[in-house]
Amino acid sequence: MYRFVLTRQWVCLTLVALVLIPVMVKLGFWQYHRHERRVAQNELIEANLAAEPVPVASVTSPGHRVPRADWWRAVTATGTYDTAHEVVVRMRTSRDDRIGFHVLTPLLLADGRAVLVNRGWVPGGADSRSHPQVPPPPAGEVTVTGRLKADETSGRSGIKDRKGLPDRQVMLINSGQQAEALGRPVLGGYLELTGPLPAGGAPEGIGDPDHDSIGAHMAYAVQWWLFAAGVPVGWAVLVRRERRDREAAARAEAETAGRETAPAA
Image (cartoon, rainbow, N blue to C red; front, side, top):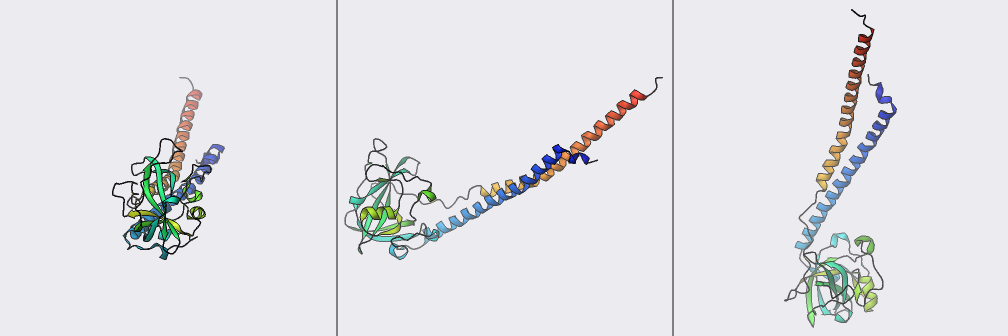
């Protein structure tokens, strides 16, 4: 009755089905783990944004790699801005997705070290290689509050660290690179400035990181698992349909043969 499943066509179809099931299950778990990571990240961002600010020097130091648990942590720093070593970071977007620059200004601390402060976004200049107009930071000693971020790398950010850029323009925010230009120790990571923000609104402040949306990863996971469950069901439906079609064809053939062999009246 079901010997047709041993034919080459059906063996190939069965093998494809057997391969698809674990692949789809694995894809479902991949999306599920992405959902879990997104939920954990949202919880981390929410907790760190709500935490009381701590002195930046208490959580990072020169050469320190900021761990993920400290990303977006509220920190404070007191010092004077060093505009002579200020750089702009290329290919950054504003809150409404316009392309421009981030303004990266070292803040010189009383102990001789520095911390990088991302003061916000400014629009580009007349062309891609011209320096943008950057409003000056406050003069004298200031105390700033910001979100601690890890140094950017090409591997983590996907941004290629291009060479041959115009003077005082960079692709990545990296304390190690800026320490070489400053000639002084720079605390690992950098601050995204949250206060005090400039009265004129420029540079444009960087918005809070999204920690509300969780994406559609869980829906995709369920979708892949339903697909995996549907494969054997679909295979069984095709087998039953094939058997029914073969039985109908056999009956039709038998009836035709019977009419051909019946004696004439």
